[in-house]
Image 1 (cartoon, helix red, strand yellow):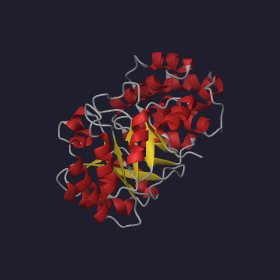
Image 2 (spheres, helix red, strand yellow):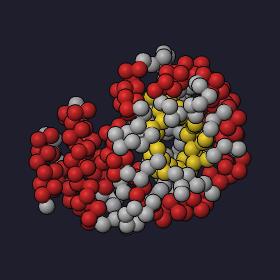
Image 3 (cartoon, one colour):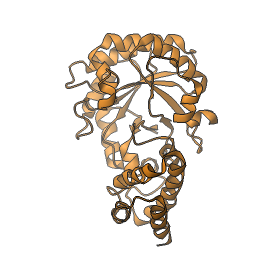
Image 4 (cartoon, helix red, strand yellow):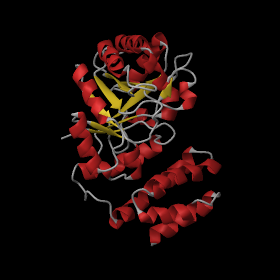
Length: 317
């Protein structure tokens, strides 16, 4: 059976959402949002703040193993930080070469590193040499910056550097998240490297997962925004629930929405918490008509108490 990995989604999937999605279930593993490496060796408290799962053996509350992801561009510093991460993350250390965010790319990180396969190789070599052999080192990449001309070379540089596996998001940086995802390129990359490749990009439904596997040739799939839009997607793929969303699913999801809201209020400065909930509900609108109505009710609200009242009313429907 295909392994399903919950993707790192900067600005969307923090530990609160990871907790909700892995409690609903179906995932075999998860990757944290990136921990940014810049200028120093980060202390343990940084990881505990961003990835509190490290205090639970690097597992979510539901028991799903989580890998810490690092983002940076200086090989020696990445190696030094990977030593710290490896003491907290027995399931592995992942390296981010795919983030398309402008705030990251302006400093030459994330997907911008795909301009230099040699640098990719040096970063992986430094990390692989620094961490214990028993701790896997993996990487996540896109197809390139503006085109795919270096896609194969970048993948080979990462494989030659010592990654145990490689996740390929089947779009370039400039593509962002615009469809389609070019799964056929994942197949080309998989043929060019001798390490397992995990497919990623534009998997929103069971049918998408089937097509992605067929076109990419990959057994394992990483799912990101599709799992946010439909938190039952991993379970649908595994046949644990119906393949098509239903009103019953929505009723089952409402308690998780309330749980997310309560935990988000504890994590986030109160005035920002409604915005995080609205972002989540905006994804649910893709799957459930009921989410459209709830989003419309929550959207004009600013006070957390008002949001709590609306969610309580939704639970009682």
